[in-house]
Amino acid sequence: MRYIFLMLIAYILFRLVHQSVNEYKAISDAKKSIKGFSPGYLLIFEPEALKGKRVELRKETTIGRSSHCDVMINLKQIAPVHAAIYEKREKVYIYDYGSKSGVYVNNTRIGRKDRLLNSGDCIKIGDAVMSVKLYGEEDPVEQAETY
Image (cartoon, rainbow, N blue to C red):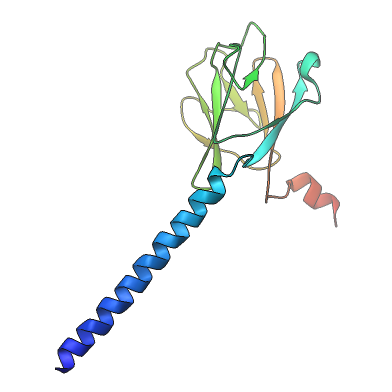
């Protein structure tokens, strides 16, 4: 009888933990699907025609020369679909689709690998220069200026 009682308690605990995990996942997914959810934004410095433009990031934001891209930059060195910035597991990454001119983050070419982005990182694609700002992360420069 004792073993049945212990098994019953273990089963109840298992169900409670399982239900809590499912509720947490549902809440997390709901937050991400809320219209307007954005992990951050891009601030464009070059080319001059787009200087000062702020582009909110989405789950996936494409950058390229094509009008189908979320960030359209009409420069010869930029491929029709050059790169993508995407959010995965609450982190933001950039990916180069194999362009000839490449994608540089903080003056380092990323190649065809996903590269984790941090707030304040400088992105260079062809002659286009932009900075990424992530919500919930302080820009290291801004943080240094507060002291």
